[in-house]
Image: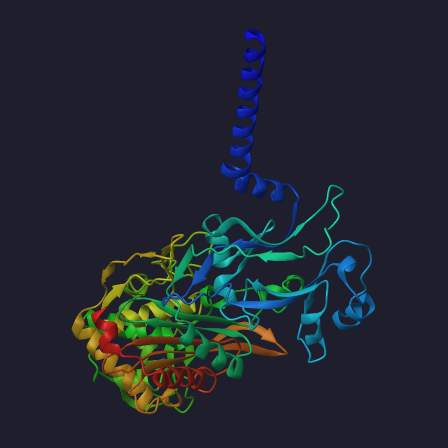
Length: 535
């Protein structure tokens, strides 16, 4: 009897243990085990990799801001596969899930929403379909790339991916009736740029209207932020393949490429002449249309000459004879010294792998007088980038103090918080008095000189035209680049803007009107500058 009791107790104990284990599995661990079971039977189809976001200065996403409509189709679930094929425009074969992009859904295609075996969903697009800021954003691939995408590739790379998920059976077939869902991974981390989307849009629109090939840069003079940078011809990252074999240079960011600068370089000579005390604004010159330099005739931009003219008038009317004279007096050492202090001959942004050029400023102390004469009007071996010209004009607008220009404000973490870096001033380049005089002379150049086409209604404007002969032939004519660089409103400069028109012939007729349109567009935004200064 005792033995029977022990057996029964042992049986009861075993049953209790099994019940306890069953309770633990079904109640305590039931949810997690069920989830694991579903995961084992879940098949994911990746739609796209998720990368970190590139933001503008106000945290507006410049990437991942658009989406495309797609249709996911499970053939075995479709009640009318033939009709689904007709509405999607695709032949559907086999039993596997198929995903199609719908470019623009029609009223008839809207029927897909209610059809069995079909699910419509949006997939985020990396790049804006219009190609806005494409040269700054750039792209990255296994073969290389350029722009912010390449420079910060490690920080923008993410492991997440958008995908379509479905439940499958033991044979990996889709379980009928259980459907599928789209899984979207969200990331906030990325790179914050100094670009202002709204100003960038204004610049892009103005470029599309008036610049076939060239560049434009806009800088916030108070902060040193590069708020817009555009290059033409433009490109779209989504159509990259067709540009790789093009001869038009769509992938080149012309804003950071070197060019013959022409008369815009005369600003450097005026700054040097004033700061060194060699000339004053009202110093007199005589222009008869040409000048002899070591036995060689150098002509003025006005073949009839400007007659008696002041330094201010010489800059306003871009008189070459005035600057041949100034250059001969200053010499190559002083010219190159001021050019370099303004930032010419060196990269502005100092960002490796961005592709920015340093340009070239001649420094040979043995340069012959004829070479110095050419350099004095921005010709010869002088080459600068549109961004460098913007840097120089910012220094003048800021009273002679050079400020480090910024394209990248900082990094954004996973929570969406940004850590901005405030660059320090580089230092004083010219005296505040020289900067004040030079600013007034640039105002005169727009008021009554070669830059009248750059006038902005309601804002006083300062700036300088440039027409740079390159020595290169195109269609039998020497290519001449058109430039205009200036700042507005001139009484309290808020923005510097530089426009380059490749082979624009005359900066006064090609670049200055584009400058004006950009300025008027920014003025229309009605930005509160008092707020900007206090922050």
